[in-house]
Amino acid sequence: MAASDPETAQRQTEEIEALSAIYGDEWCTIDEDAKIFCIQISDCLEKPKWRLCLQVILPPEYPTTAPPIYQINAPWLSGQEYAELANYLEELYVQNLGESILYLWVEKIREFLIEKSQSSDSGPDVKKITEETDLEYEENFSLEYQPLQECAAVTLNFDLSESQEDEELPPVYHGNPITDRRSTFQAHLAPVVSPKQVKNVLSELYKNKKIASATHNIYAYRIYCEDKQTFLQDCEDDGETAAGGRLLHLMQILDVRNVLVVVSRWYGGILLGPDRFKHINNCARNILVEQNYTNSPENLSKQLGKNKRIRKDKKKM
Image: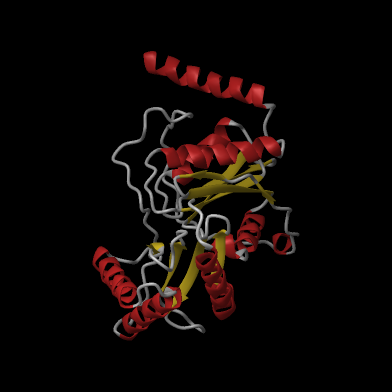
């Protein structure tokens, strides 16, 4: 990132501090060094019906000679609505050249959401869609993907026994992030022995503003049931189509059990194509190795190679 002059840098710092104070929990710092921030915006504070996430990157020249780079994330937002908001933001920038405009942008988007709320009786369809769509899977994926059943949009409304209700929250571990073309991926892991624990861990993770603001939180879990000698397992794409199935497939290949893995992705505005799946699974594999859910990396590589050979041999038959 090019260096900015001291006056411009000071103006950025003052604006960031002011916005953080104004918006509180709605404001989130994604990467302080890269000046990437996220603001959750809703139509009202008490019972919001419409909400979206405005992610901004502040270039060194902002606000003096360059606008913020932005991405609007909302699963319900149509192309026409996105274009409408983009026009609003561009008009505000042109009308206030050289000025700090993030506050104006946020409040203009809030006006848009309030108008939408007043003109609509129902809220959005909560089903997410991904910002990237592949017509076919990549050929060079490190784990040759065999399609599983599609991941359900799991809400984790399980029938819980009294013993499960009182289960303690397991420890949660966080892996090292991977960044590629402004998208950042980070894995989180927790030991789990029941669906209730899965739900509790997810709830705890979403209390973290940074994780909650991620474009996608993909997860998969596998719990071994001793009495039935079978696995209770499921996954969630969270809008990143097929990512949950691939993550669960990786966990099956590694034969891990009694563990939940969540991979957060913060989309940086540049499409990654198939590379995003490699980053998601690499993050997951790394944290599973770090937390000793697999064999050593050397044995792990042998096991993955063995699985590839088995599938190739099956194809030849």
